[in-house]
Length: 272
Image (cartoon, rainbow, N blue to C red; front, top):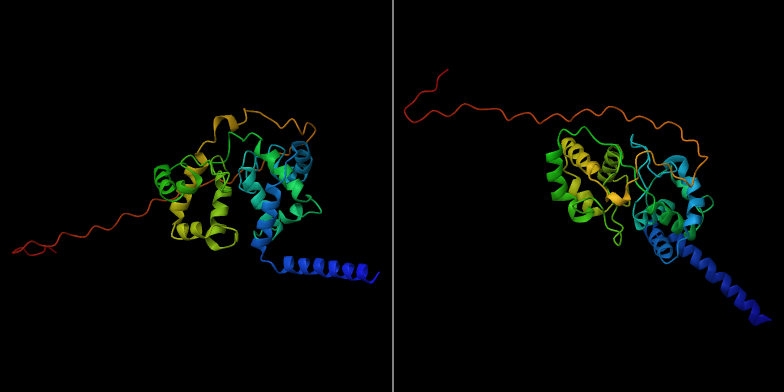
């Protein structure tokens, strides 16, 4: 009897210690643990459809977000990226006050539900009509993308699944602009430190140009929905009108350098 009681006390102390260690862990550690746990699970697409009901309120049944930048396109995104971002939001390793209440286990569910909804989203077709920028500085944007972004996100913007590197092709321009600002200012805590250093010197013109170019990169043809496609998994869903993005002014060209008069040649006097 005493042995049984002692074992029970020991088990209780062990559980309490484990809970205390989890609470003391940094948000990034907690998120990484959940990420690894979710990756080890086998997803169920039907359960993913059910779990996505919570997400469809903002991201729409098609997962296409909104061109005004309020919500990203998440249809067709790599499942590793979706899992990583959900785990980070839940662990407060990424601050997203609007999304956090919908991501907590009490609403979305546990690791299995994350695995299910990520797999469901990854197989949804993407909108062929994502939001673009003004289109006036694309050559400058192309050069900046190739020099700064292609190594991680790929020449075509398709990202990298094993490294949970997001696909950025086909993403809404205004959403990219908002996230770029959050990354550069440190508000997005789960950003790659190398990227933060890489973009800290970008001017407003650089930012608009490279993200306009990025938004115009095309996903693989087989990942794009046909015109007029609606998600058949939500046949009775009432879709309110999509908010219109605000007009996007073109970024002004930098002013030309002032021209100074040629210096006088030897033996000549300057004219006044």
